[in-house]
Image (cartoon, rainbow, N blue to C red; front, side, top):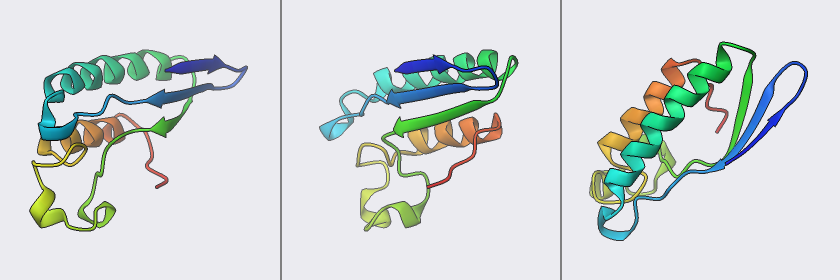
Length: 97
């Protein structure tokens, strides 16, 4: 993660941990998602955030070619990861696709 602070906003560029083949790193991803949500809430209390990077999540079914066969089997498309991304949106982030 790289954080750049400007006069009127923060710019964050992050490579979000991938849950890996067979979802072997899903628990680590959950730790990251909680840490990052808390972190952006702290920053956002000071000034707006622009968050970009490889977020490693397919939030909606339209984001994946075969959502029905991949749900909860593919890194980035588990209910946990999608729910954590929804919490980012609920915290004020906007998904620009």
